[in-house]
Image (tube, rainbow, N blue to C red):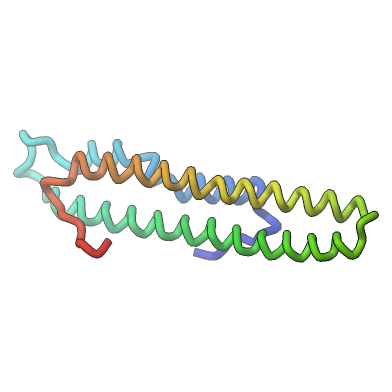
Length: 141
């Protein structure tokens, strides 16, 4: 997945994260429709379904983490540059406004890491409730 440019982190980043979180938003539905209850256990290979869902979750979480951290790194670099420019031009109000805007963007992206932690924890909780008897994730992950 391509990194999101630091300058386009407003609505496009929000939409990208929303799309990337679809698997987490739909996990309960996914588990209800693919992992059988005890009465239907013999009709579907729940271990394979849980394994595939596990792999999809791992990939989705890693991708989102990379995108958010890349945005943070890019925006941090922009903020650093603007701070340096601001120190040279203390009277430049346009520069100050741009710096504040980038700082706000940086804080928002940093808060997205916290949101990501909550989303991931919820998904793993639901996954483990339904898949713990069908699939055991590798120990190293």
